[in-house]
Image (cartoon, rainbow, N blue to C red; front, side, top):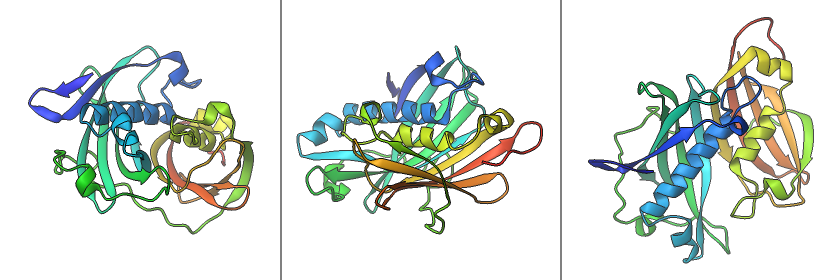
Length: 258
């Protein structure tokens, strides 16, 4: 786990795809890809002196606000891959960070772009980054997707597919629901047969508020175009936690509905 020689802003980590990273297709899930990226981003931030421990001493912490992942070919169980990540720029209150996953032939398997906020631990208000990240070099011209993750429109509530109560296993080091767990809940909104016949190609998600232990989350879904579905996760009181758009490619047989 280190930086690329000559490009100190690029962090590289080897990946070994384990059985607990894949689903019944033996391919790594999008939630696993998200977790790989988050782990590498945290490790890189620590190495740059702006990580969890450093900000924690100042009463602040990082949160992922927006994420877009594009999957060309998900890595398979037992295979090895390489993840690279780098800070790209700061835009208003957002710190942009990109990543890509490649195989042993340097072919890109998946890539993504993200927008992060630094929050005050007490007020939960976003902090200005010009002082916190002063001197941090970014690769502004190295946008792996050629675009930033977007703010998704709040124009649908969708049909409730199921509800889930937040429990111990859902909580991360910041004491709220882990980002990967939200993605897993969205994927659970699709029948198994749908997953047999479709591959997820694009996932774009906005994280809007935190969820704590004991809260009840409603998972809602609606059609958002050809091969695409929108999702909204809401607390039992009605507050929206996150919203997303998932784009699928049909692999065989008649299309199932989510």
